[in-house]
Every structure is written in C-alpha cells, then in structure tokens.
Length: 352
Ligand SMILES: NC(=O)c1ccc[n+]([C@@H]2O[C@H](COP(=O)([O-])OP(=O)(O)OC[C@H]3O[C@@H](n4cnc5c(N)ncnc54)[C@H](O)[C@@H]3O)[C@@H](O)[C@H]2O)c1
Image 1: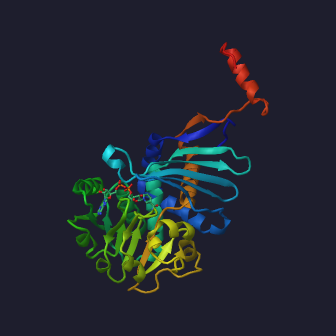
Image 2: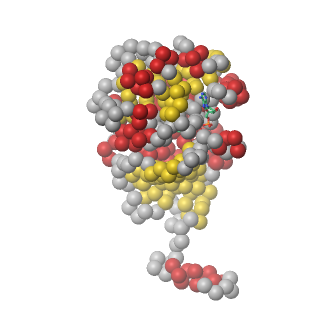
Image 3: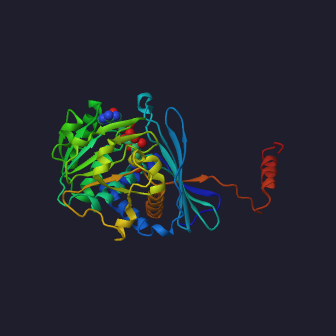
C-alpha cells in the first residue's frame, strides 16, 4: 500500500468491526494467533520494555511500546474497573505502527476491540502449549468485555466445546451466554466460582477489581488444570490465592513486567517462571505431566499489540477499511514548516 506522506491510514471502531466481520471472528483469531506466534518466535529481535504505567486511585493509563528494528508500535490503554458503572469500558485503547527508518506513522487504529482479540488469541496460543491435550471444558469467571472473545478463541484454537460461566453480576453471565448462543458451545451458567470450576480442565479468570482479590482459592484448583489468569494485571490487582501459585508451573509473557503486574507480584522476586517464547522455541518445557498445574499469568505485553497492528495493516490493501488522516505536516520544502503556515494564512486572509 502506497501512502501520501501526510496521510496516515486510520482504522476506526466501525472499520475494525467490518474487518472482523468480513474475515470472520474465528478466522481473525486464528490468523492473529499466527502473527503473535511468529513474533514470539523471533523474540530476541525485539526491543522490549515493561510498559509505562501511570496509576491513580481509579485505575491506570499505560503506554506499551515495542520494535523489531523495522516497525515500531505502541498502544495507549487504560484499566479502570469502576468505568462500567458510568457506561464506559474498563479497558479502552488505540495504537500506532510506525516505520523505524524514518519515524513516520504507517497506521493508527482503534484497539479496544483489537485488544480483546489479541488477548484472547494470546491466551489460546499459550494454552495450546500448556493445557491438557484432551481439554474440552473451560470455566470463565468474570463475564465482561473480554469473555466472549476468550471463549471463541479457545473454541477455534483448542476445540473447547463446553463453557461454565460465572460472574458476581448475573446479568453479565446472561449476556455472555446469549452472545455465544449461536457459536456451538454447550453452556452452563453457574451460581458461584466453586461451581464454575467443577470438571473444567481450563479455568480463565477475567475479573476486574482494583484489589488483591481471591477469585480462586487453593482448594478450587485440582491437579492437571490449566489456569489462564488475565484479570490480575496491575500492582495490587490479583485474582489467585498465593498458595495456588506455589503449586503451579508459571508461564509469563515478559518477566520484568509480570513481576510488577502479574499474579507473581505475590511471590519472591526470584521465584522461577518461564517466558512463553522459551516454550514455543523448545528452549524450555511446557506441560510435562498430566497432573501438573500450569498457570499462564497473563498481563498483556506490547509485542502482542505490535503483532495485532501488523496483522491489521496487512489486511488494509485488500479490505480498504480505513480512512486517510491528515496527521502529519508535509510542506513542499521540509524545512519550510512556518512558510506552509504563512501561505495557508495568506490563502485564508489570516495573519500567521
Ligand atoms: N492480560 C491481558 O492482556 C488483559 C487484556 C485485557 C483486559 N485484561 C484485564 O481483564 C479483566 C477483565 O477485563 P474486561 O474488559 O472483561 O472487564 P469488564 O469490566 O468488562 O468485566 C469484568 C467482569 O468481572 C466481574 N467481576 C468482578 N469481580 C468479580 C468476582 N469477584 N467474581 C466474579 N466476577 C467478577 C464483573 O462483574 C464484570 O462483569 C480486567 O481486569 C482487565 O484489566 C487483561
């Protein structure tokens, strides 16, 4: 795709929804997981850093950069668990992809929907390496914005067919079950987290609360289970009792960030964890025993957003689902920035 120097393709929420619907949400998740897996497979190429977080009493605002030396991406994202009461999303985001060699943006995109998709794709990709091979049943505790995406990703990538849903807000569970009604799942609505985990080989926790919460107690997690814990993703915001961590093999995205933000903030700083890319490259084992408890302590990492932006950009030439934004000043003579303003003023009969 060629672009005029001043024009940057912008994917709005409306265009993102059309793109996902045109590709199909299952295929989008499978293809996106492929992009994420490819980027995790070249982990050493990336310039990586823990995200920059600005905390407040209500939540957090984060900037998440990553670069592979040719492309640079960042995401702006918030996490405000109280937002839904005022009609806002807990997590809202947008992001940008740029050319490292000249610093010019190549794509600006909504990333609220894209974050739900990339989080679900990453969770399912991790579970491919860590969950019991015969897993058919997943519990989802916390049935908010992320939940349907998680369910569909695990259906598409792992063949999960049975869902056990629980949320402290029963209306959230009803909505999630209704939204998934045509997706071929056998769905059980549960009255407690204890009931939800019964018979589940995979447990996804996706709750939002700004505290050390105990969504799962030690006695709720049996041998052989895979835990996909996505809701504990900030200092002082966790979901699992510490004793569960002590019984689990723990897998993380990027340990310097997860030590600060993940469930493992409850453990000693030198507690052994494995980064997911090590398992994917064969450098470290994933699940080695049927009775092993595996935990994907997910907080969300910038490389996943980079992959998601890269995937969306690759769809644009064919889909045309974007609009051009006049984002960058582009004077005919690059150093004549003021002259451009001056001439615009003369044309409009306004002094610069
Ligand atoms: N790891 C990642 O990459 C990643 C990505 C996106 C979101 N998240 C996190 O995932 C969590 C969920 O995000 P969301 O967008 O779905 O939020 P959301 O606010 O839309 O939904 C959260 C749901 O959790 C429920 N809940 C809260 N406390 C509960 C409890 N004790 N037991 C059962 N349910 C409970 C709420 O009623 C709500 O329905 C957030 O904490 C968010 O920060 C992580």
